[in-house]
Image (cartoon, rainbow, N blue to C red; front, top):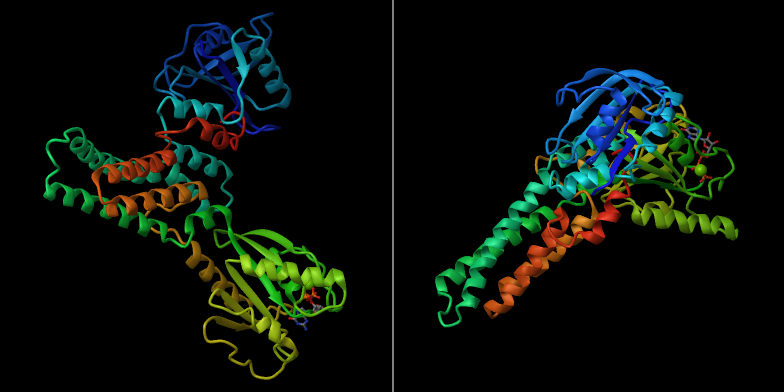
Length: 441
Ligand SMILES: Nc1nc2c(ncn2[C@@H]2O[C@H](COP(=O)(O)OP(=O)(O)OP(=O)(O)O)[C@@H](O)[C@H]2O)c(=O)[nH]1
Ligand SMILES: [Mg+2]
């Protein structure tokens, strides 16, 4: 018999309410024992005094819910116990449950894993749920919600169904060797393959928007020593994250701050001032700054407006850059148009001049890089890799000289798509995916 699992599903610690969830064949019996009565009406919150069956001692006066299989989160019998959220109440309740025969504490993500195994959700929906729990900003929440709802799963399942149908045509022709596949049918099948391949190509050509939204846009602050990079990081993060001083070469390590920028997640990295240095530690800092620049989705290149723009910083400028002329409060010449491929702003981090315009430009640049479109976006490199495999297999299938070879590649393509939603080859994937869950989910 399957184990019956239980866990605290609400957050640990002091709270107004605590929810303990049970799932499995013994959930109903345990609910009856604790509440001392018959099972409540399915899916209706019912008041109950919960007692320890061992000595009849009262645990709490709470609410219980009963979700008989298969209409439950996991597809199994599920019971929910709502307690007052005190730490001691919850600890006592969990101890009583552990003492019940056939019950054990759930592993991380085990409830959702059971939901997947019962066919309640596909893997992309399960991953969407993890993201929903982890969502830090509003845009992340909306993307996760859409994925948990199955939008991505439906898109992939739709392509897979199409390919399976095409494959069936080929397999029929291979089974009946005596009757060669008609030219017209072969052309239709190839057309179908190319159609899906094209859809996949469009879906893959998304500039990693979905992954960026999940992981955050990486922004690097770059520029000559003393330009005001650390001051800018502190302004953006509204705290003293990095040391600011008038000594050139203050910052050596990369200092990272995660922020919510107008609803989008970003990671801003402050870096060492770019210059040639005989000091080994500073030189290492500059090496790290350059490495960050190479990985960044967006670069903020800072110049001191009162100084001549240095070559090292100018070399950093490309289309993914916003140029800032800082220290406008100190005057200086009219701001030169340093590059025509990106936006530039004259600001003073010290007095706040020009900062508002820069911030709205920055928010727009971030939105451009991850904005939520209508089509579901690829959110994980796991999905991207499988989609790329699928696309390559389709390209080969369309060009294959014989139907046997085309069929084999088509089969590989179907399997690659199935790997994303969990239709095939899942065993080894499950552990990887569900261990990201917290216990009680
Ligand atoms: N007047 C004026 N001073 C500024 C402004 N922004 C920063 N500073 C000053 O410039 C000096 C250097 O600032 P930092 O933020 O440490 O500069 P940095 O680019 O991080 O310098 P390194 O870490 O050495 O590369 C400090 O004394 C700041 O107070 C500004 O807008 N106006
Ligand atoms: Mg600094």
